[in-house]
Image (cartoon, rainbow, N blue to C red; front, side, top):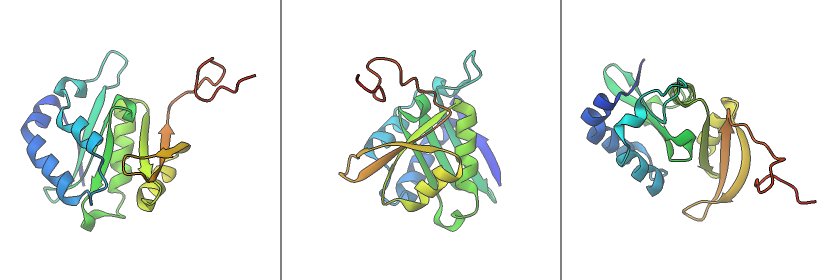
Amino acid sequence: MELLQLTPESWIKDKRRLLGFIIRFGEKRITVAALHALRSLDPEWLLKGEDGFARAAVVVAKRNGRIAGLGFAADGGDGGCLIVVHPSARRSGIGSTIMRAMMNALGSLACHVAADNIPSMALCFALGMKAVSIHKGPTGKSTLRFERGIQHDAALLGHIDAISQ
């Protein structure tokens, strides 16, 4: 397996093909918001900043020269997060390899997974992500927010986790 973290140049070159892969193999589980975030991605966000982390990551896994999976996250996942693995490559570790690469590129990662998407929830738990909240997703389904590498300060007033006294 070959793992590629896209550069601004490679994103511009392969954007159309990668979007086609997502639409073809995403099984209609990719939200409109995540797809829109990827379509409108500023290629410069793929560059590492002074802190060593990028604002966005697009990671592609290839097997035998063909796309086996891809992942995208922006702004730590809050600006969009998705992962799509080709059906013939599922349960082979490609999804977890892509997610780890995104975590390393961004420094932290949050993603939203519909409660009926068992394979994606299992992936998040297997990578040590924590389910920190549940809400109604864009399709009306219960959706869990998973996080890894994000520090919370519940003592701050106004923080969603703060308990009123």
